[in-house]
Length: 396
Ligand code: GDP
Ligand code: MN
Image (tube, rainbow, N blue to C red; front, top):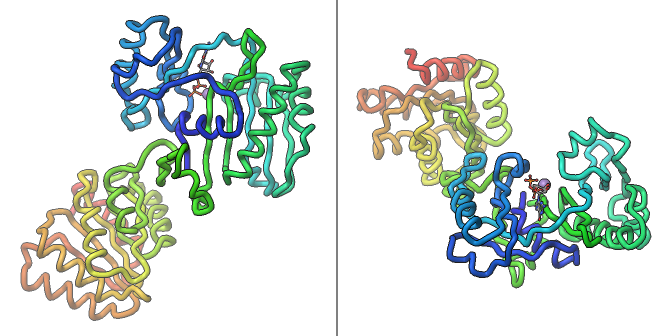
């Protein structure tokens, strides 16, 4: 779960990692608190803001107003900018790179430091691999106090810079461990013209599954509003509705609504849809014997999504019985009279009963149920998916 830069910097302050003086603003009036010159940074959950024109400088209030106005109108990776971090501008002498993450191949925490900050680490790795220092740690290992300075020395710092950077490196490692992070990255970590070490950027990714261990994040002075988030932005409105109801749901880019059984089949469905050159509009887990109300809410999430052109449904009846599923579909259609086609396959526990419920509804109200179709186990899932894709494209 990504944190915004300003949230990451709140954690940095707690760990004594120096950051520039700043204010977080949402509107022009708040510029009163600012001392110029400043850097204005749109708060977004994607990197590369510098290149995207989302980091600006201003020498005066007038200039800051113009630039703040511009930044607050930006949409980055589909999400409108709502907050801008305004920082005292610093004179940069040197840009460094520092991060701690988990090396998934080695199953160990990994510290990466480089004398070449400012650009993406992948780019540094290509252009100057010799300028990158890597060090693995054992799981749970607390590095000795000398570690930071050693690393700072290895990336070419000496004297006061080395001891300041050393303290920052140790603090970053401790923050990474204490806060259950997946990533802490400072790019750039700078040496200012006055010889001070400052974290100019903060990229922190927390392990969402460990958040129960950190009630303090929600309390003063942090007040992190760290509900679930994507890598690139906040939850969409539909995802918020689903989350409130406890339904695992993720919006995707395509036009095929996916109403599978459990999570595993949900993912397999998305793969199959792609394989037949369609695009899924969502991921959803509708397993675990959901109630009628919940099932109808799930169908509604798909039917009400303007991007969805057709819905693919598949129920392998187990704990979640086919007849319960069919009842929910029929009830939903009676109540909402949707136009969108829904093509389903039903197999397993109570499949006969389930199919009868739908067939009967079709007989009684052919017009209302004309775009609702149900197949049995003898039609392969691939055929049902291909038909759904065809129908979504306007085919019969
Ligand atoms: P990112 O592009 O999303 O990673 O955003 P950053 O926070 O890293 O900002 C982009 C770039 O703006 C940095 O690499 C710096 O070169 C520059 N920058 C940010 N803050 C300052 C500052 O206070 N002074 C100066 N001179 N440059 C800054
Ligand atoms: Mn950066």
